[in-house]
Amino acid sequence: MTYKNVILQDEFPFEYSSDEMNTPFVSEYSKMFEHLDLSGIQRYPYGIGPNGYDNHSMIKAFIVYALEGYRSIPQLIRELKSKPYFSRYILGFGSTIPHNSKFYRFLNSFDPEIIRKLLALIIKKIYAGNLPKIIAIDSKPIKANTKENNPKAFTKNLSDKKNKPKRNGQATLGYFSKSNDENTHKEIVFFFWGFRIHIIVDPKTDNPLTFILTKNNKKDFDVAIQLYCKLAELYPELYQSGISQLADKGYYAKKVFTAFHNLFNGKSFIPVNKRNSQDTPLTIPLCKMNIKMKYHSSWYEEKQDRFRVKFACPIPKQECEHRKTKYGCTKYYQVRKPFPGEVLQHSPIFKETYPLRQSVERVNAFLQLLGWENPKCYSMKAIENIIGFALLGKSLKTFL
Image 1 (tube, rainbow, N blue to C red):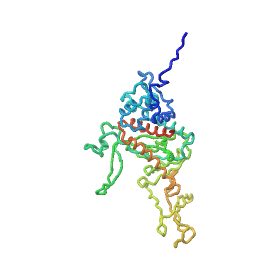
Image 2: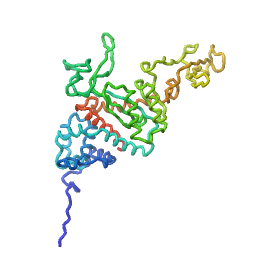
Image 3: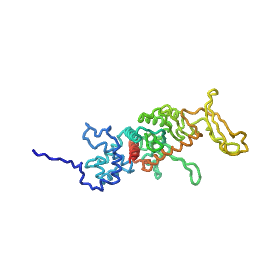
Image 4: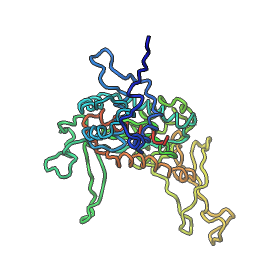
């Protein structure tokens, strides 16, 4: 009896040169995908016709598509065909690359919740049990792929919210930005058709924790509560952990403070928004030398049922002709009782901590740099998926 050793060609890719197998493109993505656990995702739709292409390969391909900022699926296919070793041994495709219709169907049918769970798994692996103690939340407008958003289009609608674009039925009309006319100096308001991506990040590392895409006509403070619940669901370790949050004026609402405090028992660093508050915001008073006074302290007087704030002399160690005591000028104000977990805007800890909120702006800039502020897909699910793949790839880059 004779025995034969059968060696699969896939085990020894002799048809590829060492230069092609060791390019920076191959080495970077191979290291990233080593930390991507796809074991919980079914690879093939068994029982429904042919098995087709591997779902794991499709996920990896879309991470490449999102991170490289390719403007179309055909461009992705051309790049994969020009990198046969990468497509076969890093992504897992066989001898052929799927047709563009397969990519489109996958992007339009894939569940964004799977991406959120994959992102949570990666973040937990990065932090190794030590999740962040502070988070930042913000939203960013995402323009729909329609002529209504094209400044060169002559026939477009940016005023009638009921007359929706034909191919973007889920898009809504909303506010984009404000500017001043360079000649008349009048305020100009820009509107657009599209959506908003809401993101929670770690302000110290810029790592995205979770995200959600909503219609453009929803308020930030309404979506924030939904996003807090999703954060507690994906990271149960954060529940009642005492974390803090950073947000801009758009999130200044009592229900935001209450929801965050009830879920995480944490503090909220949110500046006062006059439009969302019936109370007159507290301004820093001036001393007799017309210098802004310094925040000193705040406390709650239970007997009088009032909350008071104290401001003190800004130059206690310098000579002043108006100083009658060693403490200098002091002023007291009675204000409303803070919302649950609210940190006063004039306090030193607020001024020290709030600048960290810029991290979420950097994540938004990352999406804009890749071109996903203007995605080329149409459906809301496809847009949420492609942005999710970009955020997933950003977290994987931490391992490089």
